[in-house]
Length: 159
Ligand SMILES: Cc1cc2nc3c(=O)[nH]c(=O)nc-3n(C[C@H](O)[C@H](O)[C@H](O)COP(=O)(O)O)c2cc1C
Image 1: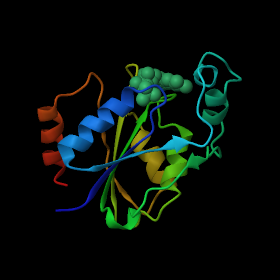
Image 2 (image 1 turned 30 degrees about the vertical axis):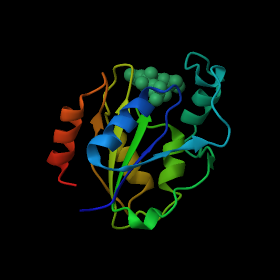
Image 3 (image 1 turned 90 degrees about the vertical axis):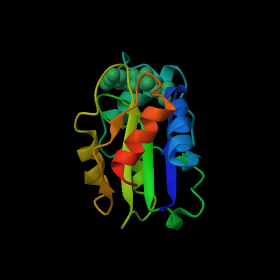
Image 4 (image 1 turned 60 degrees about the vertical axis):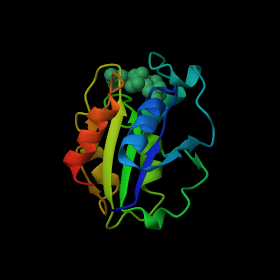
């Protein structure tokens, strides 16, 4: 069996819950992608054109710094990467994460939570910054999927 990691970013705790349940269902280790500078409530205000999240998401070159590192990344062949949908795609910090390691030969499986949007072209956005990985289309894990549902998704993926 391949060694699996669930790495996630969660600004307000929703994706964190999904990540914990998925790690349990997949028998994976868990790693939180923590921003060096945590996001405040004001930073997350998507109505504000000048908020940190708006500015980051409007700048394709934005790569918010991550505090810490995954230890022993080389040992993982499958990495689930979880995040909230921001502006119909992954937050910029996920690009930072994907550019921080050598993903050659690894399978990356995105998952997300959202206020209702789907993953859209998120997987393609991630493929563009991390061409070395085999990035699957992934899944939206809204509404607290059951352990059984998560387990059958992992089985379906064959990882
Ligand atoms: C800056 C920002 C942008 C967002 N953009 C979207 C969006 O485009 N579509 C959507 O359905 N939800 C959007 N949301 C809502 C989050 O995806 C949703 O609340 C998510 O579950 C939060 O996860 P978290 O608690 O792990 O951070 C956005 C939230 C923030 C803070």
